[in-house]
Image (cartoon, one colour):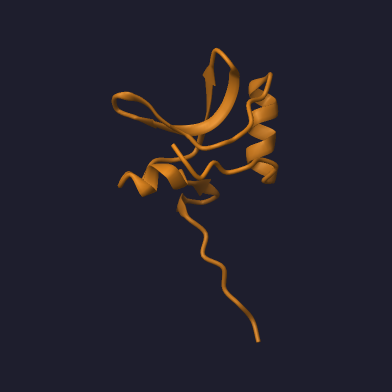
Length: 78
């Protein structure tokens, strides 16, 4: 017996922000930069919307690698 797993996507391998969805927005998960470093989050037309990752990375490439390989922790609160 097989189980199906639901994956939130807006296109091929494009994830959406879980916290953004809780706020009613379907926004793609992307790498963003802040004073603390690079993080995974969402961006709306008005600017930064949610920080989805618990982690910050020192480089953009480290953040992209973490997202691509699922090596990051989802935040569950705003």
